[in-house]
Amino acid sequence: SQQGEEDPQALSIQEGENATMNCSYKTSINNLQWYRQNSGRGLVHLILIRSNEREKHSGRLRVTLDTSKKSSSLLITASRAADTASYFCATVSITGTASKLTFGTGTRLQVTL
Amino acid sequence: EADIYQTPRYLVIGTGKKITLECSQTMGHDKMYWYQQDPGMELHLIHYSYGVNSTEKGDLSSESTVSRIRTEHFPLTLESARPSHTSQYLCASSGVSGSAGELFFGEGSRLTVL
Image (tube, rainbow over all chains, first blue to last red; front, side):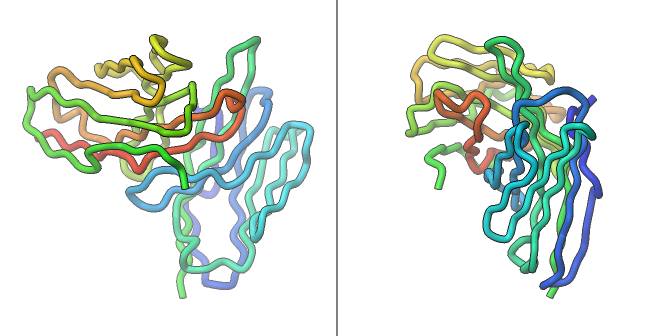
């Protein structure tokens, strides 16, 4: 089964509100990444948080990581219509010299005016 | 902006045709990947390469094949396309130090097999 499960599957908010997406995973990780995908396009990397970090900020994005609960959250503050997209978490696990990146199921965010 | 390019962006073909999806990157990345994604769904890794002449199958079984003769080029081929191959195919790459780092994605190739 997928390493990353995201919650909610879909989220609809009004412009100016905050959007929070959650990601849970099953195995130990080296880092966790969040990506954004506009409809019909490729993914764009947003932010990476390492397993020894608890919180990271980038502009209007805030990511938290709780390795004891095997979960992460992505907060987008003061959302804009242009934030409408799907958001995926991706976990990176390293075994020996091999690394494995696994994507979650994604959250579809709709920001309305 | 990521320097990774996929062609064609859209392709509609008949059953039984052979197709090649092109992927090129100008970042000198060793690692390249192909993902398959149905609309609104999660990504599934179908092939990856850690360098020239190195290719491996991913988590999702695929009838496609790949080659890595040059660092910058990672084409995907379907010898005989079927309607079940209809999907979006995303190519990605990561840097030498980025095995645990970020992936750079192309815009995708949307394949429809009639």
